[in-house]
Image (tube, rainbow, N blue to C red; front, side, top):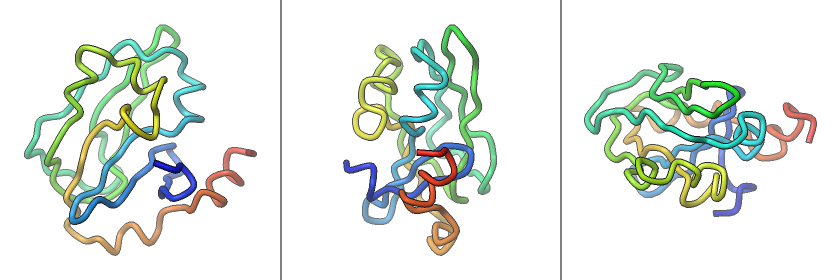
Length: 125
C-alpha cells in the first residue's frame, strides 16, 4: 500500500479503508523510533474500542509503545503473522506489518485524521 494514500494520527498510527473495515498499523516513522520490534501484544477479535483507546502494545529492545484505536469500532481481525514474526512491523510497516482490522461504528470519525502531507508536517518529514 502506498503510504501516501493512508490516513494518520498524531500518535503515529496509520489507517487504510478496506471495504467496511479499516486496516491499522504504526507508521514507518514510529517503527524507526522504536527500533526492532520483538513482540506484539495483539488484542482479541471482537473487542470493542473507542477512538483513542489503547488496543495493543508493541515492544522493542529500546521501549514498549502503546498503539491506539484511530476510530471507534470492533476489532474484526488481528495479524496473527506477527505472533511468529513481529519484525514484519519493521520490514513492511504499511503492508505485511499491519496490526488489526477495525469495523468502525462511525466511518465519519476518519475525517479528522491526517493526510500524508499533514503527517509529514507533524513529524518534520
